[in-house]
Image (tube, rainbow, N blue to C red; front, side, top):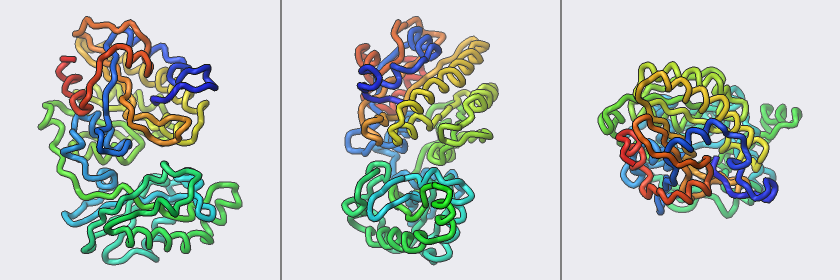
Length: 387
């Protein structure tokens, strides 16, 4: 939800323009600062950022995005396997128009993945359906898939020619991507989507590859139990490696229409049996990618009213508790992709007398001077209460 100041918002950020009384009240009574969730040599993304937020140094543990997502789909990666993120996208000539193929439905995505397996799969290549446009390809051949790949959300409206994979294993990825276009461009499922005025899933985009990581279970590292509520496979995969419980919430869509109220209810219930509960909401990120100011502000206000407020009120029945609120990275409206700036965070704790007396915003966080330079250390500060 972090963003830049916008002229359309009278030189305010969406966060500053949104009505967030609960978040501001919590921040005023707690600490406020900035945390660097993206180490210097890494590209900004939820994979790296969420590793940092959860207390794991990306320099030590990060092997790629796709292996994390694979775990949430029950894909057992062998030591030599390469997992690759497989977006269903819309291209027009060679312009990438939509990295989500119109947020294609799960059922349509499964059909397309089965078509890909039938026509492009072999003893070395398998496709796995995930959620909507987010799917996985696994390669288990002799070539190291170490190509430099570009996330599709970074090249919206641009020609794909300059951004095709480069380096070791790129030939395999490019061949699959081009073959998928020939296979899908005139397929019935896409003819129907076009007739309905929806963007067709007429190509795959392969990126985010990596091999199976070795993550130390969270309880072994921090001594407490955890659970996650999310509609995104990446977070579910991380939870699998961390040995956290994954709490499935009906209506958690990872889009603007996600059921915020249900996420709060399930989180409040989960707090009865877990030391730490992570609630992840994707909607502000999706709004940033779409350049949609209205939906970003609406998502932030929904989070404040329907999740932060109810969860904070429910925590009050415990004598001692802490609450940490932050974005994992920036997704600025004007850029429509991720950026690497340090993000604002606030921690409220019943055993701390520190008060920021400020509302939650990017500029207020900067003015406090509190800065956690190594993002993965924030979790231990949060758990131990020693900021």
